[in-house]
Length: 492
RNA sequence: GUCCUGUUAGCUCAGCAGGUAGAGCAUUUCCCUUUUAAGGAAGUGGCCGUUGGUUCGAAUCCAACACAGGACACCA
Image 1 (cartoon, rainbow, N blue to C red):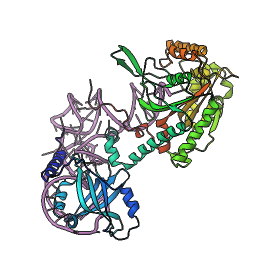
Image 2 (cartoon, rainbow, N blue to C red; image 1 turned 60 degrees about the vertical axis):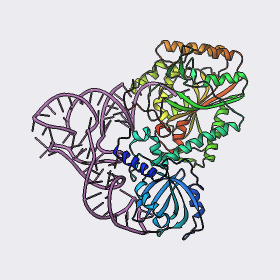
Image 3 (tube, protein in one colour; image 1 turned 180 degrees about the horizontal axis):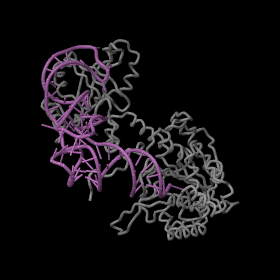
């Protein structure tokens, strides 16, 4: 474990520290503030002020040792500051510091502010304490840690070396926090529903399976909380939301991780149009609170998040954005022919809705760069959504697309238990026909509906993808602190 | 799951007409009290991802495997 020669050398330095009567893993520490506070307080200083005192804790990132003095840069959670450590101030202790202190160590220093020849505000150290001895060396100071594998596997190192990574995750935290405030301030109740499901419902996806020993039953890690949240509407809550993990046992790529975070909220006595309005308000709220420009650079493109968002019906999108000939959209054989002409695979179910979805995925989705609502979804690809009152072939549903990916999906909820039961049965048929991601029958959910779920609408928002867009990160792994990785060595 | 690319010192990277392994940073020793990727001098450090094959000889060519990155497929 510690047989690396660099580690051994550093352990010896820790021992040297102990022999001086000092603890290499000091527990009692204090500071007057962050480096940023120091810079703010003394930013206008022109020379030096020995009457001042400031105490800081930071990690040594740069170390420039000279014979009887040295400059170091210490970093804390919010910034980095140069300190000046000299024999003048520290006497004999300085000699030991030279021998023992290394890049990576955490130190506590007290001193007074001064400005160097080159005009850099620094701390002139009067008191120097090693707080935590780092026995593993940090990566190279200039290029830092580049290797993506190491960055993901040792995220803590990535965070030490790449301050912009810390920034992304701080933003992520703020986004989640602001979403929470947004819904709380609108009288939504935050709830937690099961992660272990007897039936993997609420989405079309393959689940992870686990086993409950005491009950002697298999359980599924949830693929969506939807059906539980809607049971709560039956129970009498008017608005609920949950921000939590979903698990899907599927492929991984730059937009998919096996566990990912979703916001789902359900809103009694509201309709799909209300969801779309609320979604825009949510974006307005986030952009205001995070002080983001409405036009964000993402990858090669610019995304304009100004509200209201562009809206197309599913059919309009196929024709106007996807340039699919309008006259084939009601003819199953002609759509099949069109797909074949473009060398595309046919969906497993050759119904109108599935064919539209295939056309949409291939000709429309990637072209939707600015936030765009797509409405009026075919009913047969929307097993949980409410049927439209005027046109029974479409669902009162929308999806929000940004930069070619789906970010949100919402609909007026189906609350007719008999219709819901029939749709589950239809999904079972699709499953029998080979669609292994078709929805499971959930009789308990149907039973809940049978007691009367108020008219309601609900929406899911992919938090990871939203964070990617708002922080200009192009891989979901760059917005997940610990993305899924294969084990380095075989685990039986 | 498929294809492409990568894997060399702690880190960042060179080296690949096949001929005993290189740089910068880090590290060790020495000098240095205003440095900015500090500087100067001298060292240490490698199962060249793993396992096989071709060859007198493999970091270099070939194959399989492992892991990663990217693209595609799957997937709301």
